[in-house]
Image (cartoon, rainbow, N blue to C red):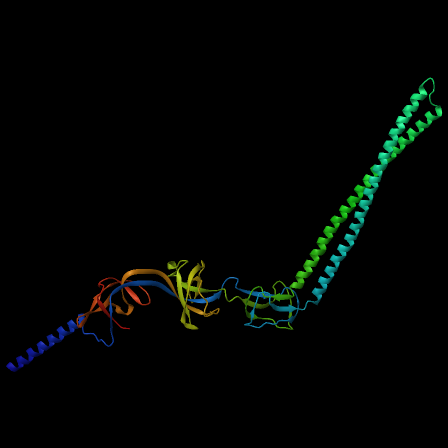
Length: 416
């Protein structure tokens, strides 16, 4: 009976010891140092960031479609997809023989207008000069007639005075002669005045005709020049050249094919200026409120896993895009050094730096666990370890901010 009591008591003691050991092991236990590393709680900087996926796209205006505006057969097209072209390089030529003939006809019409009117104007200028010379002669004849009239009047008055005397100092014949000369002088003077007036009218008429010819020439020249310009412009449509330097990204028409210009210009090629690209980042609608222009962005692409590109947010599109029933807003990232060269449609993996918290207590991310509705860290307590609750703040790809619950210099355990 005593032996049975002894066994029961021993079993109770062992059971109590196991319970005590189990309860103690929940609060602190010896770490497995082979799997855990220690980190001394210190002050550091947290770079807050939003992760998002994006895509390399050409900037607005960096890719254009080059088309034809005339109908005809493509007689030359010396480019292929992937070719690099410089501004002004030949892209294609459409059969332009008829257009060249139109230019020649328009140029001939222009030259005819010039020759016809320039000759007519030259002749009319000569006519104006001739009429002016006739007017000058009429002016001289009028002046001569005026002087003759003046002398005739003086002579007639003299003869009249002498003849009226009782002594008849002059003969009646001389008197009558002077009176006849005066009458002829008056008639000659009147005729000279009329001739000068007629000469003046002839000059005005010749000048008016010259002005009319010059105005007609200006108008005809304008019309003929416009027709030539129109023909030359249409002729220029038959030759397609690169509007800027870039790479041929698409070709739709080959030599020997006939294109028909209608309301929409037939597309020949697409040219991409691959120096003008941007990173369009798709930001979830729940995060877009944190994004602002000017924020720094770091991103990578799958083609160059060891390269990190750095740029800034320069624009946020106001209208959303919907992908897989998820609303995204596009943040445009530019200003990155495009080396190695990125290609359009490459997928980007982005970190948009939304804030920096300096001089805060930090621990590795893996040191923080969420247990029983709270955040905890495991600390070293001598040769044993203990789990304690903490209040966490911001975090980045490496560290988590500790607001309270642990002091600087304390060692925490984490798995790497």
